[in-house]
Image (tube, rainbow, N blue to C red):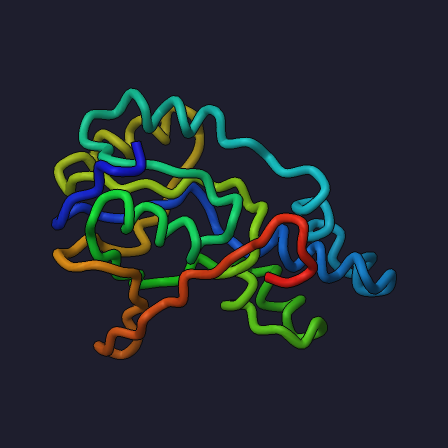
Amino acid sequence: KRSGARPGDFVGITGKTGAAAAGLDLMKNKRLARKFPRLVEAQLKPRARVAEGLALAKTPGVTSAIDISDGLARNLWQLAKESGVKIVLERIPIDSRVEKASKHARKSAAEYALYGGEDYELLFTFRPGAITALKQAFAKIRSRFLVIGRVEKGRGVYLRIDKKLERVPDRGFEHFTTKT
């Protein structure tokens, strides 16, 4: 469920974000599309995280989950709202290829990673005591996850930058529009 996150939980994700959104932008420029074929592929042929989803479902201590189709920020907001909690993002899981491509596309890598959609990674929350079981479950399927934040009392989504909290806007990929 999206409503199970509780204060004290960790926030995890099955991979890095921003590749699909960067790939979509790069497709507008043939030269850049050829220079970053993996990003274009991320947009055109997303990989469903089925094995990871099954591992999460079978692991006790996982409290909520959602796929990243509308962008990391928007999906963090969905978890926070439906669970009635505050989520503090402690690191943005930016795909390294996005860092390189963003310079050519004149858009920040963080924008792609936070607000671009279609990455199809799985975002989830879990009790701290479940981390060993999660690592073992993911090792069995030859996969990994990243811990990117924490769930706290309160409301909203924030990014911790140099010990300060900055509110993350509730925005992301909008279907059937040309803006993100």
